Image (cartoon, rainbow, N blue to C red; front, top):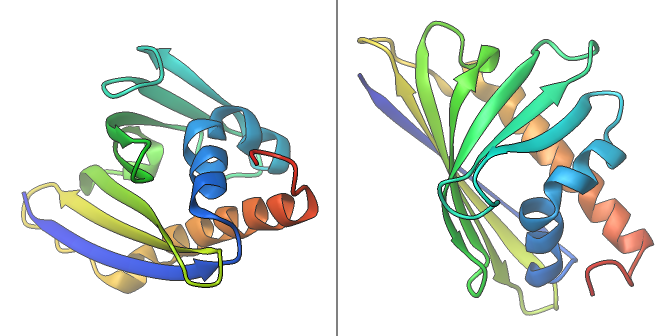
Length: 160
């Protein structure tokens, strides 16, 4: 098994606490509402929503995938950090064992935040994944963040 890491970072005009609450703590309710064409539901299938819990994201027919399952590895509400691992689902294909993610929202000087994401792709056998092979996944993640950002800008009272 090999491990390949990718890092991405972008700035956002929303405070870290609001982004963390929307994208991490309330994502199972908010994301299906904001992206109903692609995400049918997000449900906790094991645990209480804290560390060790497993969530399943169910996609609509418009997606290339049916579902994925994430295990929540760490949730630091005070520092706005979440670590989770994709452990099951057709998005892993036959070349990936899992994908571990670390998401951190840091305060920016303008009142917004800096969103930092690290993805670690755990491959099966000696398969080596290249950045261009995961571009669609990275673009999708940024797209979700931008949809949530727009929603929070339009609704300043939400998660205030």
